[in-house]
Image (cartoon, rainbow, N blue to C red):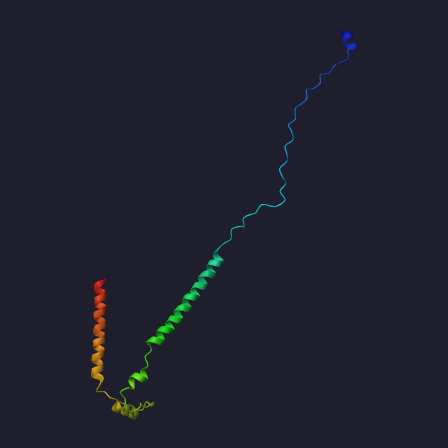
Length: 135
């Protein structure tokens, strides 16, 4: 047998071919970076700014409203007081000048004016009591 084996060419077993899968196409290469969300920022700075602006606007509005109310509530005293005065009032505060101003002031209409003021106050009190009674 040995002789037979020597004369024969030795056959080595050939490996069976391995099936290779067909090459799949590679995914396309990304050249751009995907968008990244900006990092969260604290909102305390803009919030404080908004609060300051609102406060300035409110204070400005209150100031201008107060000016308007003051203009409306300020009566023209010299015109109202001097209607019944026959002689202009003096500008000094000496006793003689004050006595002369008092003697020249028409006090006869004071009773009627006080009665008118009392009637106006009574009407206002009645209106307020009606409003409070409705509540």
